[in-house]
Length: 254
Image 1 (spheres, helix red, strand yellow):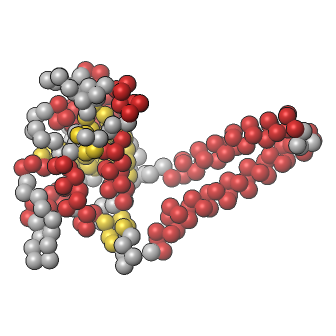
Image 2 (cartoon, one colour):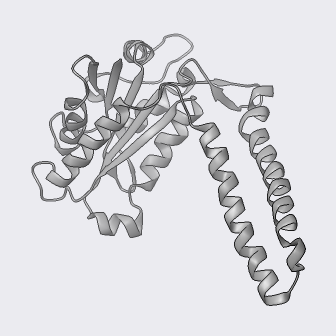
Image 3 (cartoon, helix red, strand yellow):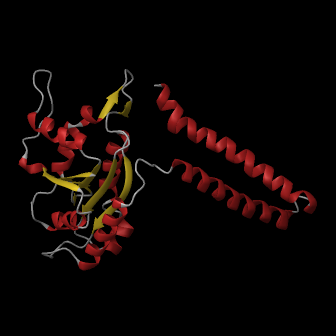
């Protein structure tokens, strides 16, 4: 298994890099691991006259790897400019574009990725303000658009005034390393999500219809379960069909 870590921080050996290294250190000994420090490369957009050599080099590493780890600190409520510049320049290499400007998965479809970021504020403050949310939204928008499957994410909070990664967060990095090592290969858990959706609908319908029957006597006692079962099945089929269309069929037809 080949792992590629893309580090979009301004410091090669800073706290963000320390958390990334903690994940990499716990990968199996048999794993092939490589870290790309993006600031080492002269990255700029491709033009009609000339492709960017740095992008060619990094893209070759991405294509040869089974798993990507995207690691960039959060500044001003968004990912670092180093990583954003890289994603912007890689846009047409990651996805296929239709005549209507829709983006479709390209050659990296079904690879897996882990996203990592850090920020100055505490975990509690980050929970309520969501300062790192946009970083993950950007990473997910880019990589899921390219057809990759997300395995997990990590937030290293409270980096202001510290000089080394926090022990509690390092333990989280170790758990993430185990998770990405033992993940199902090329399994996006689609079937699991549909099963979970069915049970969510069943529980919510039972609560709703139970309250209706109790408060308003909407359903006769003898027909309650028949009405409930038919409602759940019909509602699930309709909702699953709509989700399937917009998630798979619509894109496949394009």
